[in-house]
Length: 158
Image (cartoon, rainbow, N blue to C red; front, side):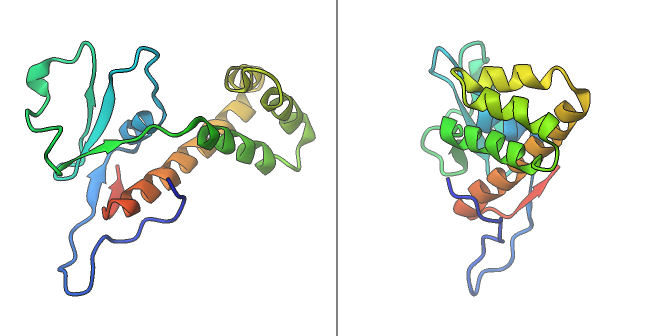
C-alpha cells in the first residue's frame, strides 16, 4: 500500500460519483486486526461503505453469498508489520521536542517485541497516550485514503 492522498476516482468523461461514506473506526480496525488463527478477512462493500468481517463466529447468513467473486466487495489487506512499525516510529519522531516523552517510546521500538513494549510505554503518561491515539487515528485516515485512492474510491470518513 502506498501513502498518497485520496483523490476522486473518476476519469475524464465520467460523471462524478458521490463520496462513499465509510466508518473510519471500522476501516482502521480492518487495517490493523490480525487473527492469530487466520482464516478471517475484512471486505469493503463499495456500494454501502460497510466494512464486513468474515471469520469464525460470524453468522453465515450475514455474509453475502457472492462475496468472493463480486467486485462490489473489495478485500481490505491488513497493514504489514513494517507499515504499523513506521506509524509508531513517525509518532516518536513527532515528539522530537520532548525527549522525556520520546525516549521511552524510542527505546521500546529498539527492543524485542516492539509493538507490545511501545503500548506498555504509553501506559505511564495519559498525555502521551492521548497524543498517540490522535496520531494513530490520523495515520489510519491517511492510509485508508490511500487504499481508497488505489481502488478508485472517493471516501468521506464518518
